[in-house]
Structure formats: structure tokens, C-alpha cells
Length: 130
Length: 100
Image 1: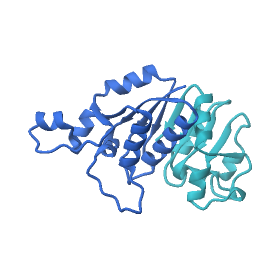
Image 2: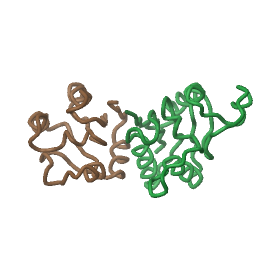
Image 3: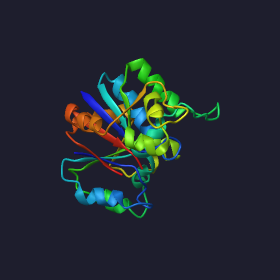
């Protein structure tokens, strides 16, 4: 079955990002397809590569990146939500004259249309948030 | 329909809203702090136990363990599932509604 995942909360605030990660992993283990993981609102903070959590703690951003690399996942960060929260890729940084970008590997910035498309294309969409 | 509730019934009213909207044949999965609604002897336990039998209620095992809630503390009609069971529940129901 084709699953879409919506993550509305940032890492280390509530449990949403952890729950979404474990659900995504379990769905892949069961042989389902993850069509896309869409990060919206504070969820875009999952896509920063500049986070440095303590070494003995889970690294939520790395977990997503590693899962994306392993399963070729499409991790999409909402552009409008990302701009407000300072999540930029190289293009966005250039476009807004910022001197750095911070998007984590495996993530890409795109628009809300990608969430609508997820709803149209997927058999199921599961939302995680606060 | 599958309903997911992720907040304690003693903190937010989403569990109550969920119960007011759930229809026979629906399933409710308690996750995160939502699992507190699965515990015996609380202020909501009687309502949960008295719910229509056509409504299935599940709680996510890893979230129960993380909060120190043992199976013996659960209201009898609650079934415990792991993340794989969560995935199965989503697949079995045509729509998932997250009561955020």
C-alpha cells in the first residue's frame, strides 16, 4: 500500500516526530511504500543539518536522513514554513541573500502542492503533530 | 475509520471529541500521552469500558512501556499493538483521522 506521512511538529518538543519516524520505519519493514514524508509548520525543523544533540541521545534529524538514504524516501519541507523558521537550501539562501544554508541531506524544499499530491496519490495519509 | 488520539484525556479534550464522533465499526488507537485513557480506575475509565462493543480500542505498546503502564493496569477491552500493528490498523481502515 502507498502511504503518505505528515509531520507537523519539530524534533525534541513533542513526540510527534519520533512517532512518525517509528511508524514510517514499521511501514517500510512491512513492505509498504512511503510515497512522501511532508514536513509542515514546526515540522520543518526536522530538516536542519546544524543540530547537535548530546551524543548519548537519539539524533532525530540524522534518523530521518539515514532512513531516506536507505529507502530512497522523498522528505519534503514546506517552503513557506521553512522560510519563517530559517530552514534554507542553497537556492533559497541565494534567493534571499543569506550567507548559509542548513537543509539536511535527504530533505528538499518544495511547496504545499506536494502535500495535496500526497493526498491524491496515496492510499493512506497519516498525520503526526501536537 | 481509524482515529488516533495522542493527548492525555486529563490534559486536552481530543479523546472526548473522538468518542463523540466515532461510529460503530471504527477503531481508536491511543498513542503518546493518549495511552493514559487506557488505564483502569481513572476518571474516564468507566466511559471507555461502557463504549459500544462495535468500537475497537487499541493502545500503542511502546508508548505504554515508556510511561511505565503495565498490561495488567489496562481496561479489559483495550488491545495492545506495536508499531507494526499501528501500520496494519491504518491499512485496514480507509481513512485515518488524527485528533491533534
